[in-house]
Image (tube, rainbow, N blue to C red; front, side, top):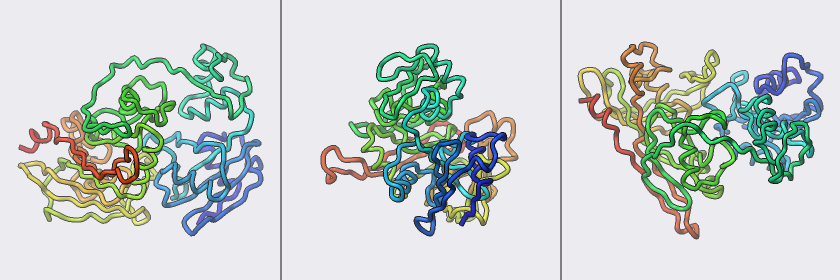
Length: 396
């Protein structure tokens, strides 16, 4: 397990952009270590008067509810927030540090400046941007306009940021299923699941879920989101319309009781035509937003089956047994059959291929839908998204 000292903690805070190069190890105070179990370590400390927790847990899988539950079990109810990873567009919270995934929780003090409170709520915004929105009348405290960044607020105050309407054109995505608890759509290729910044003009899946009545995390840029598909991946994605449903869905994803099927067009011809790829995957330290096959990585398994071939490509059915980030793309590239159009992992991609979409499609999702009334009303369903026409055209 980790043996973090004040210098290590300071490095972590710098990676999360909480500390700067001007801070020194003595700014870290009251450093204590707690080991709840054999898989977890929690380091509590104070930095410039604020209380923080660094969590080292190899099983968290970027699951914020798991992290919060771990903290509650060991420290009781805490008012605060898990800090997002500002360096990585793919991972929401996990920060790679010395071969481990680290999480940072900040305890919110009882009184703090308005701009600081908004920075906690919207970590993707710069302090300068937040102050600009405050001064221009976009912020309210308890429904009253506030135009001074330095005003002190408490945790009980209701702070709202009235984000300007998106200027981009709204899109109607194909709806596969919808009830009062969930919505399932066929996400087009090229659409973000959610934006990195709350003021991003690009219309996202989260925006669509919000349009259809989701109130889960509706004051963030992740309204309704319980899992993600890469921008270039099309297909089935499910959203939650309320917090209760979100917890039930997220639990299934974190416990891997869902079943997903993907279709991909890959380069070349696979032999054997059906196999299990069992190769561990780790974050690529030289390019932290990407991943590699590594003996030091986490277990990852992908079943593939060749469906059809032409003289250049193969259409394969992919069934992930684990849910590592970029798992399918990393595995197929490693065995010498990169997914067509994968600009990140295919190092031999041609100019023509790079101008096309990435040919990866989430064809089906099997999941238990939250009940309308009692738990006995829960239903196990399989949602499917038809293979896009360009797949069929490419493999003919």
